[in-house]
Length: 345
Ligand code: NDP
Ligand code: GDR
Image 1 (cartoon, rainbow, N blue to C red):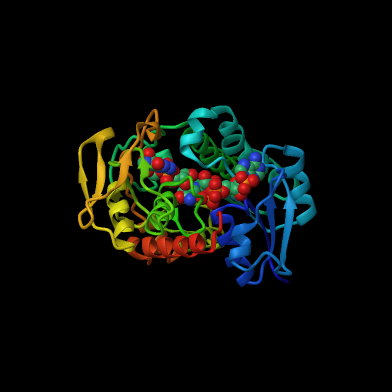
Image 2 (tube, rainbow, N blue to C red):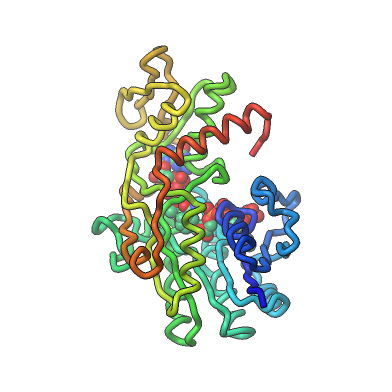
């Protein structure tokens, strides 16, 4: 009999890629989406899986315990991937309570539903490198102490520990993936890499003058999302529920990424000025293409993330293969195509 899985957050980047992977493996996928005034399925449409016969779309809100219980009852799913979250770090400073309710407590609604309805179901929690926050040690591993720096990071840390607590208290197969930043052409446009790839494409096409950004010195370990969802699946096929870091083990600054994206469309950026006076100028034309605007600074920042995925490599056979240069090129090309077609995603 084919397996079935619940994927919360199917309208998001990872939800779309994970659904694609599970459908390819023959799963029946129950993908959950939120009731909003205009639901948007552009990602699963772009992947060509929106009309797949084994994809069942289910209306669901993570903050509702009774809905979580009914979700487990009606689907009888063997695997539950909790990808739904208020996932934007910047917004979590403005909406700390909503973020706590969705990103933190929401995971517990699902864990409770599993405990009540089907304790045999395997659970994946989408944990994050944001839990490391103020760096204590590098590279970060499963044993690095946590020090979250945003309401988002704190909420995720709560959900992470609750996953471990349900593992230890009730024997639930709860795996937690501490994933470092992962990006793709399906990334939301509010996140750094996609904001940059989309803006560089628009500058190139004459649709935008200048790209405005916040902290240029932050360093991130950026990988390709399609490879990371494969790691999630591997965690739920393992013999025992564990915590794993997924990362590339390479870190670059925001500035480096912008330079890379500029290069992908033929610009040669040089950087002048410091902090909120910094600008990126194209050497060939002398044009200012990038400017820092302090309104994009966060009240507290995570300065440096670099993960060591050795445990995942050793125990799951997982590794990241796509280089950041390849990823950046892929994102910029996708955004050039979209902008030429006048697409708004
Ligand atoms: P996205 O922001 O692209 O997707 C989040 C999903 O959660 C969307 O489908 C969203 O639905 C859904 N959602 C939000 N609130 C609720 C709610 N109350 N009830 C049900 N669904 C809800 O995130 P990603 O795909 O990038 O990330 C997936 C998960 O992995 C998230 O939990 C994120 O925090 C975590 N993560 C991501 C990393 C990354 O680099 N991408 C790294 C580490 C962890 P809607 O479309 O309606 O808003
Ligand atoms: P992050 O991703 O906060 O790491 O969280 P984001 O892409 O938002 O920021 C990355 C870094 O870039 C700096 N930055 C800017 N960021 C945005 N969004 N917009 C800007 O204009 C800008 N200028 C500079 C940020 O300050 C930050 O240092 C992501 C999310 O997907 C989380 O859900 C996930 O858990 C973590 O990655 C791992």
